Length: 150
Length: 201
Image 1 (cartoon, rainbow over the protein chains, first blue to last red):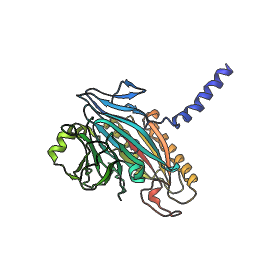
Image 2 (cartoon, chains in turn green, red):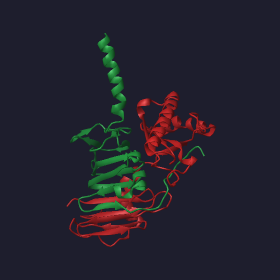
Image 3 (cartoon, rainbow over the protein chains, first blue to last red):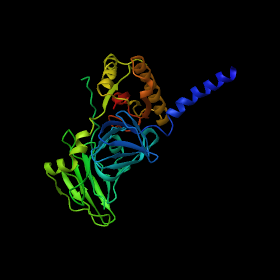
Image 4 (cartoon, rainbow over the protein chains, first blue to last red):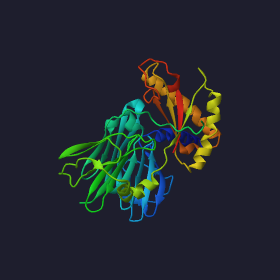
């Protein structure tokens, strides 16, 4: 019995470490329409609004699909039909000086409203495509803060 | 060649990548909801173009062909290329900015009232994704400020869980002094930066 208690305690101690570890989600799905899913380890997974998205996931839609997500840094990304976008890198730890955001559109259409990483470190944001890469030029702007309490 | 289209909105600009009619790849820069426009650079091995005005677009026919000189794209073409993607672009996450009483672990009265609005906001947005982020000003060492921010963020999470938000939905982190609302020099007191932000996505 003592052993069991010890094991349970160890699991409890580990849980927060896992939560703060490298595999923190990069964001979550907000809208799924038609044929659309997250691809994880090359396999489509059941994708509903609210699903967590991780680094190395791809988002893929069929001819009738569209999909939208929000990242932890407030970046909003949506894709239209017959599209595929890969989340290649997402680091959002300003206090550790770790900022990086690389996505790759393989085909189709995408709309992206950049967020806090783009504000703090525009050079750390890159949107790649098969024909060209898109970078952000430093622009002086304050982050938008929506406060419904006012 | 697969066709690609991108619409990019920067924090104050929107980027759209889109597959135009035919075998074309196009990037268009759009303003954000405030009407402000940022700027982007579109580049490949053959050249690079800066887009800095709203609804400017550049076409890239191949990885070895320079992006075209930026030219305006009309609303009809934007709608045709990006309509479906733009239609589902989510609203911006809501930020609740909370302040503590000086040298205290109690929220100010105003922030306490604001905290009560977090749960309704998560229900309203069907959100499964809430962050609690601690921030400080630049007085003191960077690491100390990271820990201070984390401590306060953990306190706010406790309050949110008490108010009925599922703990598993809440991510807690600290940006210490490195993501200020108001930029200052080091060691400058700035009460507006000593805050905890609750972000509902």
